[in-house]
Length: 133
Image (cartoon, rainbow, N blue to C red; front, side, top):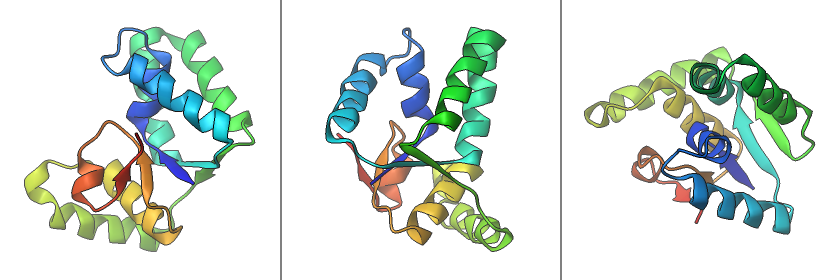
C-alpha cells in the first residue's frame, strides 16, 4: 500500500517536470504489481490548483476525474481531530518549512498504517516514512 503525494501525480502529468521520467517508471511499477494506492483530498486540492495553473482547465479536469474514478486509488479525508494532529506535526517540523498538506498526509498515513509514500518531497523521509523507489 502506497500513499501518493502531489508531486507524484504532477510529475506523471507534466512532461516538463524534472521528475517526469522517474514518475512514469514508478507508476508502471505500481500498475504492474497492482498495488493499492491512497491519497487525500488535501493532496488533490493541491494537485487541482497546480494542474489548472500549469496546463489549463480541460487537461486538469480530465486527470482529476480519472483519479476520482479510479478503483485503485482510495481518497482519504481527515477528521477535525486529524487536522488538529496535523498542526502538531507542523510545530514538530517547523524548522523544515513543511506544508500543512504534508502534515495532513503524515497524520493520515499513520492513522491508516501506511509506511510508504510515492513522493519527491524529502519531508516524508524526515517524518520517518519510506520513499517509494
